[in-house]
Length: 442
Image (cartoon, rainbow, N blue to C red; front, side, top):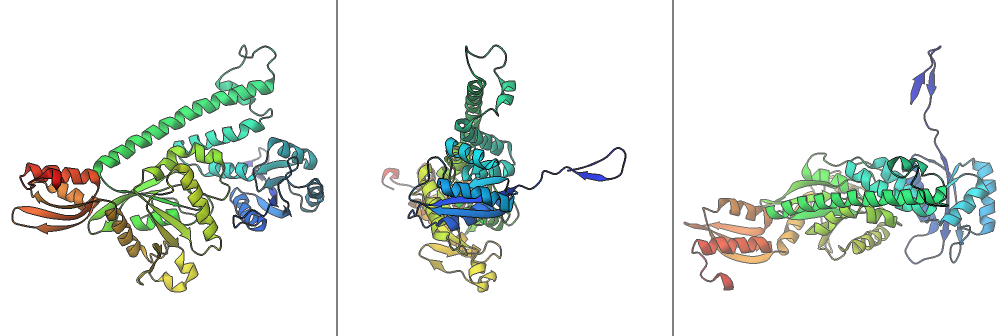
């Protein structure tokens, strides 16, 4: 931000200076496919996304993190020299720090100390665009901050408490803790209201009997770009940065043979995703639970794609959606094989996975066909005659099911698979028209 002085035409730059970040990690040699160096590379991308300038990084091999210093005391003291050399003014740890670890490092280094969880929360706060997204981010921040509370929450007294509300002998810190707990309680009520609104909208979609598809995957795998490509226009924010999209976007997409589905782009997952975010965004992530099938988008050009899939599976399991039918979408195929830049080339299907490039359009036709086939396979087999008077129902059959329609003299023969609720509706219409001899055995 710039402002003009009253006596001169000189423009004074009042922009917040860029923070100089130093990264710190502990390698405990866990068997999860991530080395400390790899995890620090991702942490550097997060810090850059948050607007920091990364000026250095260190990691230490240990059996476990130090309960007092995170790294060993000797390594912690070496950071004083690193501060002198690089001039860093914020230290970012790759794991969640305890309040004691954070205080010890702050007192030693005399700089701000945050951890990966706080960094991700800040990025979410930066990118939340809707009222719903901001609500959920604030709740996650409050729950993260409560155990680390010092004397920074007195401003909350404007929303409650104040003179006459403190108990005998209650300290300012205790007052602040009570105020932040009250704020958390209010935020949870508001987030629950969001959940109920989404549930109502989902029931409305269910009544339309249109299949639903949730796009999931690691952050920056190309989920939003895929939704935009399937819809044919830009409906979701797609940027080459981590957590560019937080708020879910749903659109109807044509799959072929008259089929359609509601496809929802959801928030990306990441290694060491803060549990506060999973809890706070549960209202949004329930879109994944409500989906009939999932599209798991994987960045095929990333060397850590297998580890990314493990992370995604862990979050899906936590949400109760780990066993959902899904198609693995190997995106960014054009970065792996330049020939995949041509959208006219046929895309191979390998072990249930489809190779695509959401940017060039390569493989999207194959993906539509596979998605339509998977949705159709989940339904109930039907072979019924439906009267022509049920034109609206026949139109919905084409959207919802994977069926063949044979037009006869007095009725349309429907053969294929449809959703259970739609199968029951078809049988009822056929029976009412006298085209079903024994509905119970049909």
